[in-house]
Length: 155
Image 1 (cartoon, helix red, strand yellow):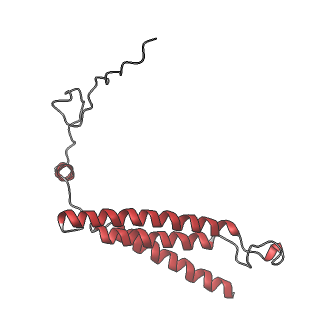
Image 2 (cartoon, rainbow, N blue to C red):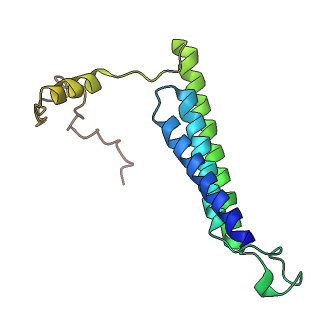
Image 3 (tube, rainbow, N blue to C red):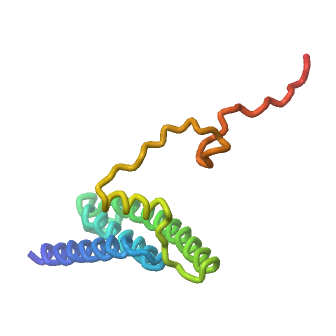
């Protein structure tokens, strides 16, 4: 009965960390998005930890095999920590660059988001982009002409 209470507490911790992380991810401030990624990553790490068997150190010869903990969740958590650290470093660099350029870390709506919101408010569909305007008329179009080949060595 003692192990069940601890597991229930960890399940609540996973729920609080994941819920707080998702809530912060939905904010417009890059600092809050960064904190949301960290909290969500920690919640997932605790969830992975709950999936493993508890016990002694998984070292051969340290004890009987049936009393050893499962090493796979521990390896997965270490991998998740490295991935979360890399993503955190990237988001921190993006937030710093945004603050350096604009003086604010707020993510703004772009023009296309506002147009889509206005169409949704009027319950209209956006006009489809059939393409074919050419590279000079539409900045999103790619030049259909292939690049000229470099002359190769003549045999």
